[in-house]
Image 1 (cartoon, rainbow, N blue to C red):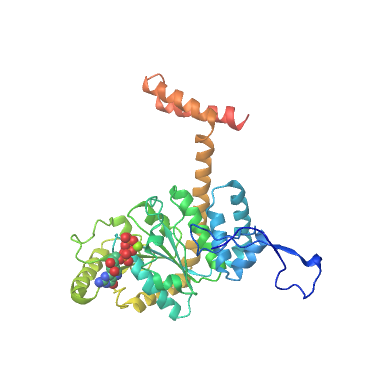
Image 2 (image 1 turned 30 degrees about the horizontal axis):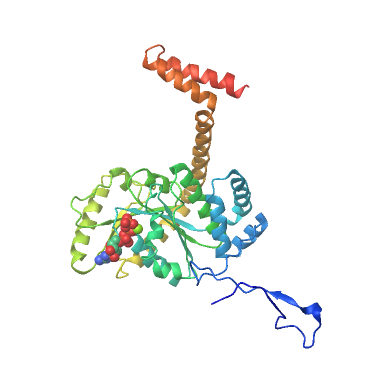
Length: 374
Ligand SMILES: Nc1nc2c(ncn2[C@@H]2O[C@H](COP(=O)(O)OP(=O)(O)OP(=O)(O)O)[C@@H](O)[C@H]2O)c(=O)[nH]1
Ligand SMILES: [Mg+2]
């Protein structure tokens, strides 16, 4: 099919009757035998911070994706560049509506995001979809697997979909998602949708980075609260009972009434805003406009009461504090001297040679004298 031998021939553009000075060696292209249709691999050129910044601000999706990869990297070198980049783009962030979406597995979160995202695009918005899923070592990010359910949205020029950063500790995933959100805002995405799976700590984390928190549930899953803890309901600014279509409409309406009833006895997530339940069908595109108008009312209300800005300031402060806490803990627990001492002192506690309180004091004293003041 092809020969790898070097042909001593003149290229096509050589002038007629050209002399020997135009003789070239023409090397035939090499086809990748494993994947003949693949494009030649061109090594991506290193971008400067300015290149990243310009690309992101111009809404270049390839550069945006590369900037996010930089943020997701765990190498210290990348971390420094990423932080510099975030600092540069910070003035261009904050203009979106940040929406967190959670719910029981199979409730239709991904289907909802597809329908809702397309609805937003029809109304001249540009949605970006991110995910928080620190547990997804196996599925490698639920959204990636779900791209089939967000097929139209993922192909739409006006949307940007990013699977969750590869599994790690929640602190790391949180930082990456937050910074990805900022990059998306700088790139001009004006509605950020953050999907989370699972029940528990993830929801609290997502709540701490969004303006509006939407809980998607379904009817007929047995007990009224579907294993969703009261605490999670109390984080929500709206409950959406999905799959209100076909024979299920009546069940969905009943579930909505039950949730509305239950909500009377719970506290609201946002002061002065009454969390209510609504129905929708993500598949049949029903109730989508209604939930968007609820979100808009919410934004208008919270902005009029300064709650919107206050919450964002509070969230940034909380974020700073939690990162600082992590750093302090890491610098303590990862110190080799401390590790060794901790091991010894744990043994001493086991054999009642020291009390827990004295052990804490001893560890802190050692940390101060042998690590901090060394
Ligand atoms: N009848 C009906 N089915 C729906 C609707 N929305 C989603 N489904 C179906 O419900 C199933 C689960 O939908 P997903 O969108 O994957 O749900 P999810 O909440 O993202 O699920 P996980 O990511 O696994 O937690 C799919 O088979 C969907 O086709 C709806 O509005 N009506
Ligand atoms: Mg999903």
